[in-house]
Amino acid sequence: MSEIFDETNMRQILGKHIPEGETLLAGIHGISQEVQIRGIFGKCIRTEDKLIPDEKGGVIALDKRAYSTHDVYIGITQHSLVIAGCERNQYLYQFGDVPDGIGMDVQEITSELFLADIGTRFSLADIQSCKYKKGWMGSVKCFLTMKNGSYFKLIFPKLGGLGKGMPHHAEYREAIIQRLSEN
Image (cartoon, rainbow, N blue to C red; front, top):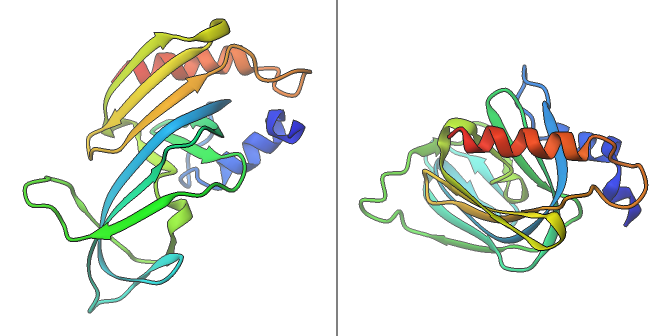
């Protein structure tokens, strides 16, 4: 558990999801209370754990949800928000037809995409709203809604764990709150 509160470990995990050409500006340990990730993917087929590109493939609508509290790393780059699990988590995956009038862009699959990687990176421009409330023991509760209907209920703790594994937590937390508030 102590490796969760390690800035080097956090950078490695978030680094797997950072777009090429961007760098991590700030990253913290947080807590996810509830997640719903929505996506529509085209020209692909679904296997047990991934989407595979296929010119003859159809359009797949995905809802990926988690209702249990779990540890996450939250980071921002120049243009992206990255939220990655500190440990392997279980999600509820529901697949269906594309709902009429939802107005979501279809993401064409050009390479294999693991279901576990869906919903780890969002463009900062795609944030619809971000609301904050004071939480317990100096924490900040964040309700983040994306333009595609995805949302996150997050907690940004005041401290980055015991010890000195995350020396920049307070500074990075404020930078993330400030950047998310700009949208």
